[in-house]
Length: 451
Image 1: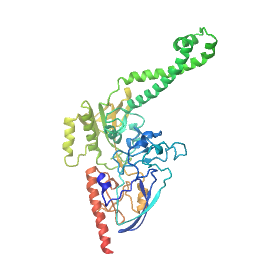
Image 2 (image 1 turned 180 degrees about the horizontal axis):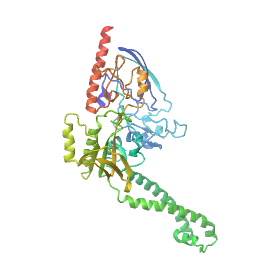
Image 3 (image 1 turned 180 degrees about the vertical axis):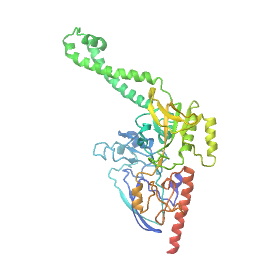
Image 4 (image 1 turned 45 degrees about the vertical axis):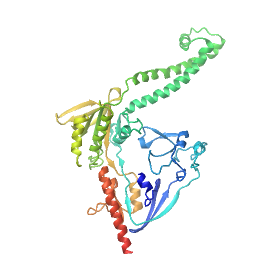
């Protein structure tokens, strides 16, 4: 990406939307909305000082909601351009509250709360559409209890878990354990605050809260005037303290047994090859699951993975060998089965109910963590993009192309590549991107000669 950002013939317009397209092949006029960052790109150095002092914390969508970010942030490390943006939905100043600490901290004077959207007109000869894809929402399959069971996650979430820059710093921590640790932190904070209040009563009256409470509840309290005055308040504070202490002790005891997930289940074709949702094969999911299982084993050699699927579609060069190597060297097992249901087991472990087709028996098996290989779906705003460009979509919601010229859309001069066209993996997307760029050049040269 650095090479692209530095290329003299490439202009990057990040954080921008196409709002209108007029003209024809060789002579398009594209109207672009450059959304306000509230950070001056030419001044921001990406140092992150503003992020460090920002008091507002929100869920981080880049980490699939398993981490937090600040209201002033960069989408991910090493992003191009290397600049930050203020979240207009959460920044205190932009939502009418008092703050502005980021502006005071920024030595480059890059924060500009008065910045507005800008409209830019571009004259272009050809267009390549590369909008990427969204993952299928597994909540549409209630039998897998995604969101309901903490330890059932998507392959994209697991990808972030495996990353050293992800929410778990590369450790395969179970979401249920992480939630428990967050509860421990909150309860510990409340416990300390409650303990300080009790200490003041104990110091004033020269007895422990437990002794006082036992006498208070037994109506045997030998109280002086000061104690009579404080008794009801002290008892209420102690009751509230016990309501914090009991669950805290239970959680801390259970936390002693927390460890990384050792037994993993990967469920293939979640939303794919399913007449209820997408009847097509998403193409890359099988190899993606095998890759993730191999990396998980590299992180911890005690990790065992089972991949459940109707079949493993290892169709690329060297893919079958990669699959076999995973089974031989990375503790990966392959089970020909479509999981029927996931239920909650002991210690928040997901329990898979499936038919073992080799034995023709219905089985139950418990895992530490379940990863759903979700289907490749068109991006949510595909219809809006198609309307702006004046091109058609196919019946699945991807951009429709000419069968004889598979990169050409229904409008001359507009081409597609990658998952805008159909589900595909990275090598195929890169090859197709090169082809789309070549087709765009051909279109420009054709109309240049004609003029």
